[in-house]
Amino acid sequence: MMTRFTPCGPMRAAEESIYYPDDLLPKVQETLGALADIELRYEQERARLARLDGPDTVRVHARRRLDDERKQERLAFERRLFRLHERMTEIVLQDLRSVH
Image (cartoon, rainbow, N blue to C red; front, top):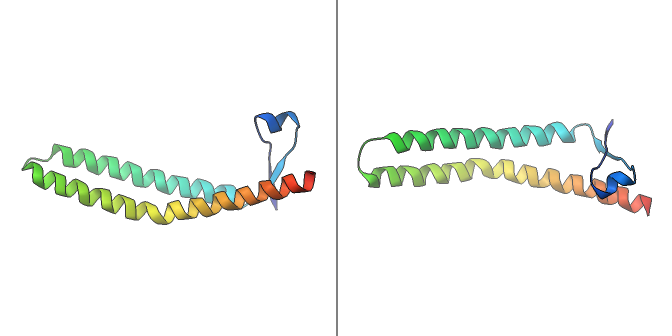
């Protein structure tokens, strides 16, 4: 099954619609949600680290480790989002080719 999306901007004037597979939007939303969850946890942990007592060197080391963990955790979701974006782009390009 396909979901219809009406584009905005200049394409909207032409009143053309692009159809995406039904599974695409939920996958994009799920991936963006996962990235948002990672960011929320990161910001909470960063705030917790800022409140810790102790030497600055310990906080700096913990912050670097936290940054590395965040980057690693985001990587798979960023790759998935990139693949979904490629898929959406291909659908749009195919639609444009079929119009012209």
